Image (tube, rainbow, N blue to C red; front, side):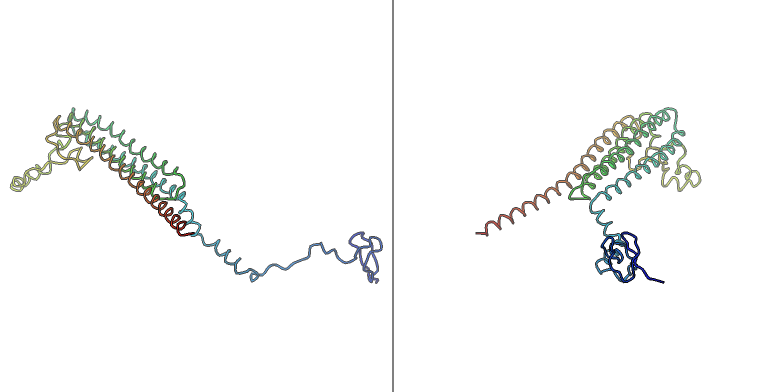
Length: 289
């Protein structure tokens, strides 16, 4: 059997000893541009730099820390926490609102009317607190990129604390004062028999020695920090409003002052750094002939 060479260009057959095609004049050897089978790369073929790069891709903490340092992830996380806090505050307020209704039912007729007004204002107070938290959460989420990550968040959060406290105090002052006008002493003290009265009936000597302490009323259940303010007269309601509303205002001013002090301290630090840099540049130009 005669061996032949096939021309990869014209397809003709030529003797085995031929090296060039007489038709095309090109080499009868395999086209060097055709793909050649190659062995798969060995795992030992990677350089140390490539191996270090592959390991770096598996270690994610560097990228996570870079995201946190940029502030975007930090702001979003803080905003989510505030939104959750707003939902929890709304649920807690709803539970308290239901509990207060059970206390209103034990009041006299005029006290019930005051309790209805109190509950209507209670709904407004819950809305004010929840919406304030949501607004501040949005403000934090929309903060622009800056040199500082936490300080702008702290400044807004301090304002939020003052705003929430002010909302609660104004509600207690106004709604509590109106309730005092309608309910009288029963707003502070329960209308039923107190624990001291029951104790005096069971053990007369012990009850007479300590006196009949009266049970806590509705206002002190809602806000235990309230003083008694007398026997629940009209003047007591006016005093509660006169003390509570200015107190809420000054509380708001105090926390806004803290927020602005944080911003001022940052501005002082930045200005000090700029001044130091300018002074160093001036010293260098002064020394250079």
